[in-house]
Image (tube, rainbow, N blue to C red; front, side, top):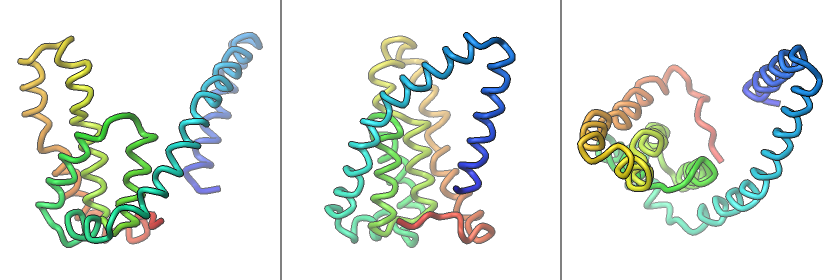
Length: 171
C-alpha cells in the first residue's frame, strides 16, 4: 500500500468509528451506501482504465512530447490548460487521459495545468449548468477571473518538481 492509500484507509476507519458512535443503524446505513457507491463506480473504472491503456497506444508520441512535453514551456501549459477545460466528464475520464498523455511523453507541469484546467474551467459544466443557472454575466466574470489559474498551477509545479524528484508517476 502507498502512503496515500494508508492515509485514506486510516481516515475511513476513523470516520467509521465516529459513525458507530452515532449508533449501529447509522453505521449500517453508511456501509450500505458505501456498497452502493462501489457498485456504481467499479463498472466506470472497468471501462475507463482500459480506455486509457488503449488511448495510450493510439496517441502518437510526438503529440505528448511535442505539444505537451517538458520542453513545450509556456505554450504547452496554455494548450494543456485549455485542453483540460474541454475534457468532459469526471475523474474517470480525465485521470486516465493524464496517464495516457504522460506515457506519450507529456510533462508533469503540463499535466498539472491540464488537470487544473479540467477542474477550474470545465467548459462542459459552463454550458450545461452555469450558463442556464447563473447567467452569462457571472460566467464571463468567473472565466476571466480563473482563466490564468491552470497556467499558474503548471508554472508553480515546474518550480516545485526539482524539490520533489519522485513526485511524478511514470506509467
